[in-house]
Length: 399
Image (cartoon, rainbow, N blue to C red; front, side):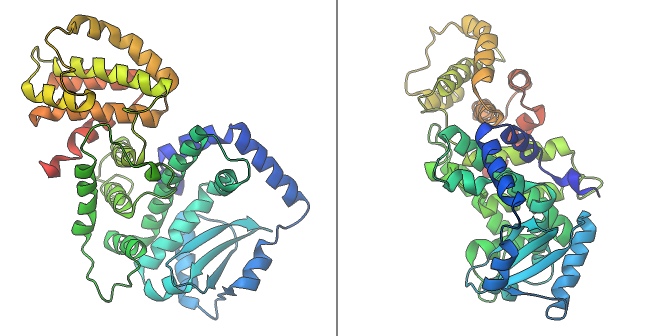
């Protein structure tokens, strides 16, 4: 398996966009100039504040690392360190002098075992392998010159997809879906597993309950979710389950297109809503949603009471009227699509498509005509058709 194939498409695409952003270029140029003057002292700080675990001290850990390095095709000398901390944590530090460093908290090394630890090792190696250090997110988000809200959102959205990529690298090394889920459970709960019995299905059910909480149109994800650099642990487990059922992990699994669409549906749960935004992009998205929702609901020639009820959840009571000019709204769609596409990111457009799917499912099962209209809008917005299929099925467990 070529490890590059494991990388999330959204991680790769957004990273490419970010590398062209002037602020990112400026910070990277400053870092490069500092590095030209000599090592930045990373290794010295590690030696001063933590303990280097040699092969003699932790042969079992080095054997795990060797296995992960071989599985991912990583070609750089590796040093492993442990530092005192009651929290479960690990980090891959940017290489220095041709060496890569991975740090573990003491509590993580003592509580994690077997495939759980291989997942953590593979995850950290994935960050190096996919060049995640090339985007200096810490400098950008925490420096004196704070980024614009738009750039901050783009950075945190990318970071969440970067975690998805690293998780896949970790899962590839662990080769044990239950062990991977158990590792994420421990990271989320802070438990060692000795007091509470882990149940993967119940842990993943939290995603379904999040969807129920988010069911009210217009609420969107809470503001604090937008700027989180890591996806919620239950979302990561669900994303890894999608990975495990894909061709990347199973020769008879679903396609990569289907995998990526499913992950994107999950990730939209942490994005801001456009329904109450005051930007030009939000306004154009609402206008498109209005026209698109009417066209979808009317795809079979009749708009049902249930579809009207869902429509009014989005736009308010009595916003639907028999006097609406359905033909005019349908003819306006191409223009509204173009205006929206010019002002929005792909993540925002996926939210809009997801909301159109919600309206289409008002009668429990969307008709072929409704799905055809949504897929047509998705194509024009450059959203993969597989995303429509995933959005139609992602909440079926709640029915």
